[in-house]
Image (cartoon, rainbow over all chains, first blue to last red; front, side):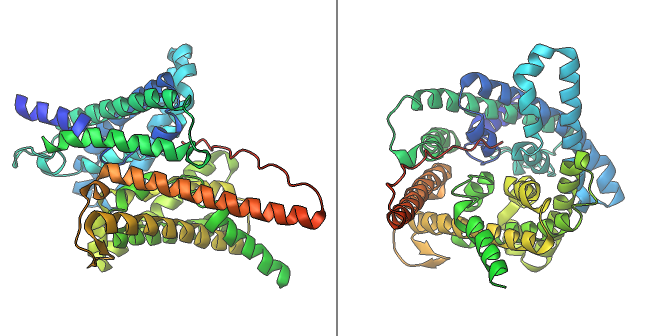
Length: 204
Length: 226
């Protein structure tokens, strides 16, 4: 049990990192990673929405949509759930903590169209844990607990990659770069080197 | 007739080159990076996005006067999600190989920024025929870009071209994640480099015709994407 949990953590954060290995959530990775602070806020917001979305979509799919035989509507249902959750979260944070809202609020609406959220909800719809977590023993069936754990650490992995990229880009800004390489291209090449570092975890 | 041809020509040129979704606007990056391991996969992904883009552009354009402004984004998302669901069913039945290869990236077409971007920026304001042309050419621009990246990665990564073995070498770097970022970055840089040169050449020619000194190029503005 403990080994399984550890495997989920390592897999979600490092060897199957959402941004650098699975290519989910690249848009915020490129758009909001100019500074470490904003990257961190975005990462936390995404993690929060990921957990909440999984908490709703996984039971919705397993206990309502499968028994009713309406699995084919999953895309429409899921995107609705995510949009509603994001809207709700935005309003709640605005009421509870205006300071937090000011630092995080602008990133929240962007999260609805973040592939990482819909991606985690879709990826977790499997029967066997080994289909999501590479290297896990076969025969461990997926359940809500594992799903939430995976969502939490996928969010942590997302945040780690965002913050690392934020640090790299703060340095990149000061470097003399060829004109056509400025902006996205040099960021992509930097991401390529980070992806190489994360690839090593998949080889372990 | 001539004027309308010119208008469609401009829409097509914008979609293919000036506002190329993959290289110029850098939208829909997840699908580009994730599906470009082989030329066939990236071509299939490009066409799928084009189909969804065309259908959603047409429907949104038809409904543009019926959708209230305040709820337009949720309405667009529902229309796009329906199109993707239909596409998923069709692919599962008729092209199961592509369906398997696309995996999680098929449902993720819903949150592809290109489609929502065109819906918001173009289809919600323009007539149906214009929106259809825009959808087709934005999609084709994206398909060409994706296929190009796919061809480069497949050739360098496994020495094959659309699945046919042409060379006997293998550079593993290009088929895994790091190679995807690297090839995409270099492709954007080259695209910017060449389109800038073409722009400059045009500007110089125009300036010579008008006998005024050439204006310096304005700095390329970076677009913030979500």
